[in-house]
Amino acid sequence: MHATTLITGASQGIGAALARLLARQGHALLVHCAHRTDLADAVARDCLSLGAPQAVVVQADLAHETEVLKLFAAADAQLPRLTGLVNNAGIVDQTARLEAMSGSRLQRMMAVNVLGPMLCAREAVRRMSTRHGGQGGVIVNVSSSAVRSGSPAMYVDYAASKGAIDVFTQGLSKEVAAEGIRVVAVRPGITDTGIHARGGEPDRASRMATALPMGRAAQPEEIAQAIAWLLSPQASYTAGAILDVSGGR
Image 1: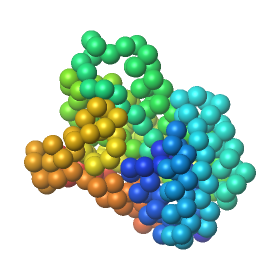
Image 2 (image 1 turned 180 degrees about the vertical axis):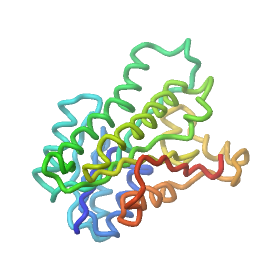
Image 3 (image 1 turned 90 degrees about the horizontal axis):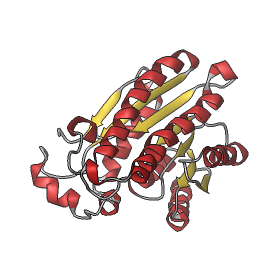
Image 4 (image 1 turned 60 degrees about the vertical axis):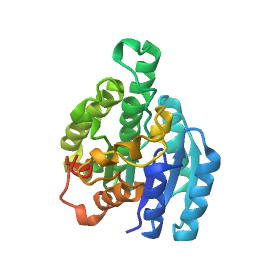
């Protein structure tokens, strides 16, 4: 059976690595980006050269329901039936203590990191669920090992948003398991991506390497491998699971 996968936040980092990996496995892909269409276009070109039958780029702000609807309408119009959703898109902000965080920062964090994945999952369920005439599928949510530490004095808002994703994963998994949909999550540890620079600490991955059990940060491709397995038929009895890919942290 063909696979069609929508990856949010696929213009760089873990999302881009996953898109290239799935392209090698023959997935048709929707490469979502929030801002950098130039990077997303480059990822899509790579995917086509690596074997993806299709790779469509869509820009959307997932904090807004209308934009999520636009994203899924593009998938409906341009790709075969959706079989996989990877809720990978997420944001961090400057490291700070809670008392220094503005209300607008907190609202934006929850809108992008919690509301966006929930809206995307809702649209995926509407298309995949046997209850709605679908043929099943897989939803993979990208959480974070920050849920265990809470990221004090850094970004407790980000950690809290990922904690919400963990609970959402478990609840939705039970809700739709009998309808042919597996809902799972991965919790990456410190990964060498651009997200640290966006949080004001571009060297965080290398700086923290010696404090990690394996002595190094993860590469995006290592997280992508775990997500690809969860999407695959080899994970057919894995639902509601939250897989730590954190190097033992």
